[in-house]
Amino acid sequence: MPLLKRRLLTLALAALGGAAFLWLRLPLPLLLGPMLACLLAALAGARLAEAGSLGSMMRTFLGVAVGASITPEVLRQMPGMAASLAFVPVFIAVIALVGYPLFRRVFGFDHATAWYGAMPGGLQDMLVFGQEAGGDIRALSLIHATRVLVIVTVAPLILTGWWGVDLSQPPGVPMRDTDPAEVALMIAAGLIGWRLAARVGLFGASILGPMILTAALSLIGVIQHRPPAEMIQAAQFFIGIAVGAKYVGITLRELRWHVSAGLVYALLLAAISLAFIELIVHLRLAPALDGFLAFLPGGQAEMVVIAIIAGADLAYVVSHHLLRMVLVIVLGPIVGKALGRRR
Image: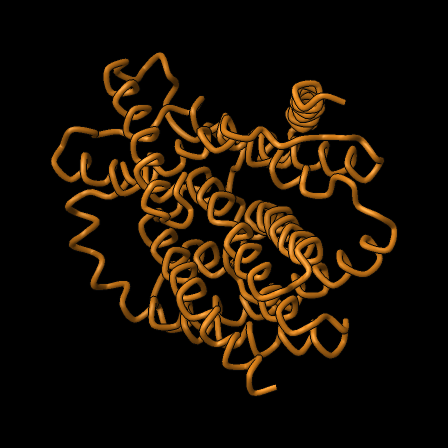
């Protein structure tokens, strides 16, 4: 089937999933609906395809939303996050100490696959590092996709069931109530920031590039609002597609072994995360909602979406996820090579 037809099929199935979630009044319908629909279709053997550059372009809206939230007032509050941020390296170390033996000894993966499967970094970055180290790319893809899938599915249920957060509310003001000139500037900042970040090789370029450029525009007062609701909803839709479509072509053996490994790992991650969240809240370093979203090792884009809709402190949540990504990307390969030589 030609790529265009596969993408059109994927978009149609995602739209049906979103519509079903809206009709059933389920949380995060434009994220979880497309994600579940594409997941089920992929498991059924449908030949789906991710949205490519269009999907990456939609992610830029999330970077713009985060950047627009960084104001001079937020910068003045940043030193107060230092104590909480200090727990992030410990958080990563505990995950590695639990995840690596799980994949290496229990599931029998080779060193590179076990190490980069256990690292709570971005999926694309972990695939690149894992491939360079000689790991199993398919196994890494399914392990990390399952991690994100489980966390992104469970987190909204906890938010609505435990805290009573209304996740059906719009993630911003409608497009019609936003200055068209500012919307155009946001779109331009997203595209330019993405391209510049990609050119210099910045990880998570489609989010971090727009975030940095928009933050600069926000700090000087050029951009004064977040992107309208429709832009955030479009980003949700395509992120849902990206997660669900990762399971295309999965075999029964992969489902039984690789996905099972990812599922067990995700459950252990959830337990570790809850322990750190409880500690952060107990020490009064952050409100419970912010601590919860900051220490859940889901995908960066997915956690930003949930934080926006839940009304969490975006600067707090994003700074913790950003530090986690930086530490994993910088230190992960160094520690992995050292561990491999030792063994």
